[in-house]
Figure 1 (tube, rainbow, N blue to C red):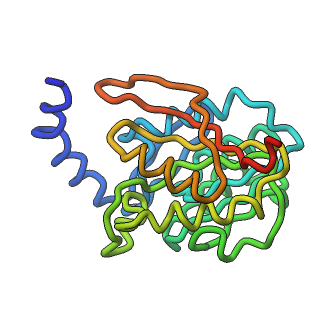
Figure 2 (figure 1 turned 135 degrees about the horizontal axis):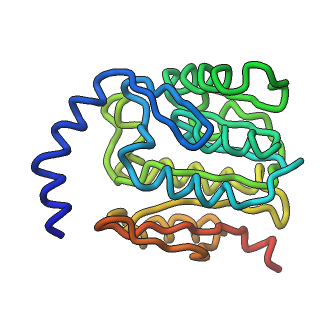
Length: 227
């Protein structure tokens, strides 16, 4: 716990100042621009944890969707692994950031199988069924006061999760896979309860302690698909 206290005291103020500016982030062969205000994959464990998990999947020819895509790291990994990608974010800054990163990393490739949309949840996504949905969601049960809180807060009553789980049956193929990364500092019980109300089940398939924090990857299935 000492390392967490030191981070809270000394490093968080420095990170907060650093994130006021556009920065560059590298993940293996990908080079990303991270626009100020967009969730930064370098300083938060969940992004790189989910990225490493997605890298292990066979995605060739699969349809892949990433809600809350942020800078687009996860979607770009999926695209690089020959998936057809649809990603979206509620924040227009993030959408434009993803478009820039796609062009920067795949300028000479055919990007017809990569689509990025500004959308609040699945609201602006045409109904279609995906093989894989992967999400690093906002999970703090607080209201969203401004656009900088989109990546963190899911609403006082978990409105983000209510909309997500309610929409999932219209976008996930029967026996498709939905993966969600969460951390121990969120209200896992409350999120599970919202999922269960919408006929979704959680299965813990991966767990890793990174520094002081446990992170989890859950596979979410629809009960009707399990019958």
